[in-house]
Image (cartoon, rainbow, N blue to C red; front, top):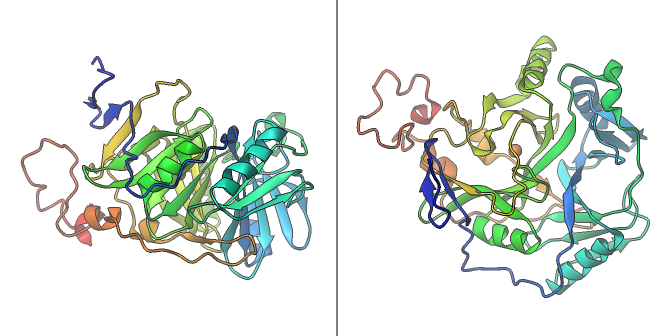
Length: 387
Ligand SMILES: [Fe+2]
């Protein structure tokens, strides 16, 4: 089918494409006059954990991340294709929470730009020329307008890229950090601010009135981060990529063999949004980790925005597998720059869970079906009808 670029078009796959995302907000964060930093990509997450030994078992012994550095209080981990010092920092602390969502910028000057950008927004910022953590130099940390602890840096120690070290690889090898996912009450407000920061929306879940989630990228994939509607600021998940979907199945097999299948929260499956293959795990503190592979190239300037109807049963799982309620309700706290948990603000817009999971079965598999789902399918294998 030919796509009219000036229109919102329904594709043969059942979702919509257009050149514009639904980020209209009546409650905008002011656009700074200061130039936004040139963000390259998602770089690492600082995760506060309550039992460092238990976390090490999960991330190193089970998932196979590589240790760049460790001591009694911190473990620095990286994926097999990474050459910067780390992608995940596990830090021992009193509560399970996120200390930083960290992005790499293109040049040292972009760290200055990030600092000026957030100062103009009136946000709390802290600049450390020697960095906040091992392996990373000059950085700025901010409490962003949505309440998230964001970090921007350029200077970093290089470590060996272990891609060629097949002797070290496990069948479920995590090869790259792929993205963050953040929970925030007002998605259009968040997406508009992220656009000011230079991000582009690639996909969204919406209906005529409400935006439930938006995916945004700097690197040319579906996202570096996503904004999921809910009580926030909270961290929904951090995602690592594998090469292939069989690597994800290998992680499931391994967890089964270790009698740790209770770490699997959702999946494996194929997403509608992003088209990626996925698996969601919960670490020993309950932090959610996604294993993700094979989304698509989004680097062209006119890359179409994909818009999913919130009632489309295939938006979050292309095979129509129901989303478990904990996936909608649970998320990790985030810390302010003093290390204290940020207060969580309730979402007042419609909740995706409430409108898509329920006895009424609001969702559809075929938009133009005029017949109801037969009784033998209701309450048996479609979770949405059970609850
Ligand atoms: Fe994700």
